[in-house]
Length: 259
Image (tube, rainbow, N blue to C red; front, side, top):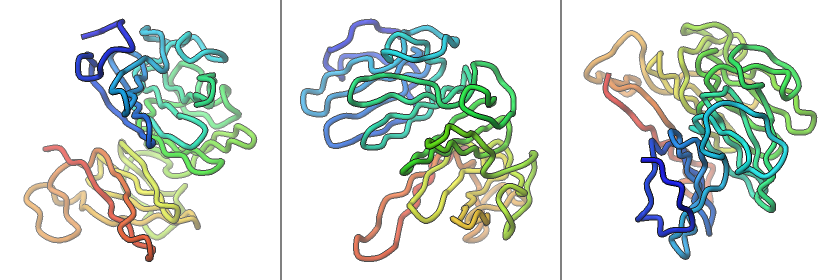
């Protein structure tokens, strides 16, 4: 369902495997994964345009207009007041698009799979999916490496923030010593990071002290839920919405799929 016509009414357009959304008061951005584009919907006029990607898979770097470069499976999107961050699972790359001029650059990865910390394009990732940004930091789920990685925007350093090797362990300890199993998504509330640890059927939470805990799910019980800590479905995505403006309370929403 690839469509190369832009600036048309959004409800007349066609997308191909949309995944990942972000919005502000005027616009909504969507990862049009199998069309290798990020699309933007004007919420006032209801028109849709291509905001990033040239419709081609693969990797050809970045450093200019966002529609001049490949976005290979842009599956994760995060928005701040100044930038749109895009996780491309197909090229194992994290991009940044400036909202004021649509200039796009590479923050992490080099277009090939691996696991290596380092500055910007000297780092290597493997199937990044979920992404979350706050202030001068960007966290993303590096799913095939069973980790959450951190980008420090001040110096471009990419490092491991959660996880070590595949498995399940580490609750109550340091997050970098913990084990995850194919994590799928990440979000935050300003106090904690929340991670959907798909292969472990758990939601994990990481505090600013970098200590990790399981808050929902049980990898030893897969079936009908038997208690408040059991998930009978696979946690794919999680979202945090403020519950009450006068209290530090949040609702965590979890998207589930069948085993």
